[in-house]
Image (cartoon, rainbow, N blue to C red; front, side, top):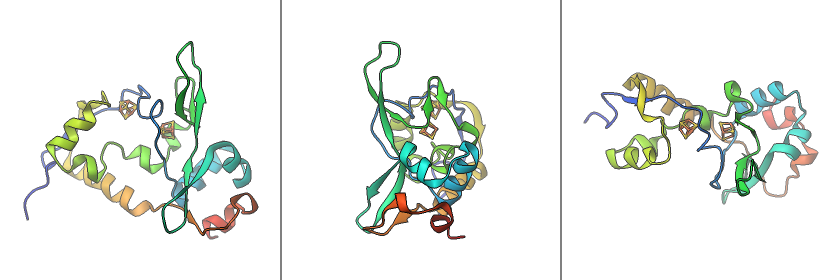
Length: 170
Ligand code: SF4
Ligand code: SF4
């Protein structure tokens, strides 16, 4: 089998510029482990966390739990689609951020080719700069994202009537 495009590693260090957290609409899907970590970090029960930070996205098979976007005006900038966990200056839960964020930009769709890596670099100044990340490092992140899974609720379930134990299956 041929080596993957990232076989010699890639340079990447996050500059914490927040470009991937603000401005453009998008989804940050949550895994069970993400939810467990975020509830602990924020000291919230599921209902409060859901009301403040989450939305549901129809996947065609159920409703996936995603972080919500909020519109804000910051220092004269026009209102934008900010991740609800972005606080003035950066991610409010950086050390405990969801696996989708923590594994970026080492997603299969981004590291699959020179074209996709270069295209992504147009919106992320950390790509192509900083620390050299080995093939093993990249594959760990690909596996972490693939293995995390997303919380998907059945149609008709009211998340505000659920508690963390039910969602987390404990
Ligand atoms: S766009 Fe890139 S450099 Fe900026 S915060 Fe996101 S991952 Fe980090
Ligand atoms: S959780 Fe944090 S790192 Fe992820 S998009 Fe939101 S603000 Fe950015």
